Image 1 (cartoon, rainbow, N blue to C red):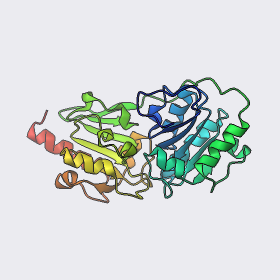
Image 2 (image 1 turned 90 degrees about the vertical axis):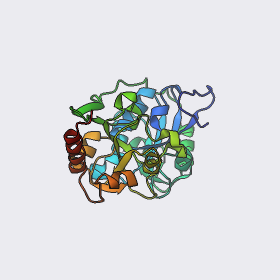
Image 3 (image 1 turned 135 degrees about the vertical axis):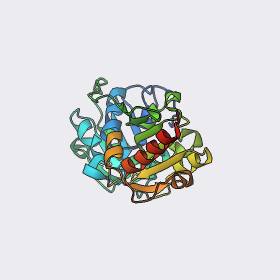
Image 4 (image 1 turned 60 degrees about the vertical axis):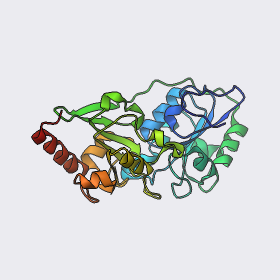
Length: 281
């Protein structure tokens, strides 16, 4: 069954498709989730909190420090089978793409069930269903630190949000730096950003297809850029801010001084500086 945010599944719907791991909090325990999110640590902690039986993510091109698959290690610590699909076989942000994708990485628990790279996500789910006789672990308390932080205060605030799902109207007219990928969830324009930000920053997750959030935000006249997955750890907004190098920018951002190859921290400094000179509040 495929879910939308806020929906729950029936007790007999063990396989769940979710465009984002942030949508699975209410699906109930013992689910096998095929998810459009990256396989980073943030995603893994969301899966732990939901009490999933097993989960498949997108490998987001693996990226800096293997951040795109590091969540598999987190889930391994709790004995939860986990895998990623190759981002070349499945567009990130889409559960249906993940379901049709090819496995690229597995944790040891998944491997012990017979799951290997090259298999399909459906074969992963079948292997878990065939082997699951025991009880699913209770939902685990997240060990993550606060995932939203005010980096710069002043006339133009700069926020670091590990997930774009944390953006609210509180972040209107601010700069929002996220650890999230730059693709719309399931292709839905409304998932681009839940705030009227001055500037938004994402991770390109390997850039197989054009970053669709940027185009939607361009229509809203919101500057938006993506950083290369190889330059910043996906799922970590602080890495996006301090280490990210721009790989794509929408027209609004380019008109505002952004360019491919530019460090995000330098671009933001320019935007903040101009705002201070203009007395923007």
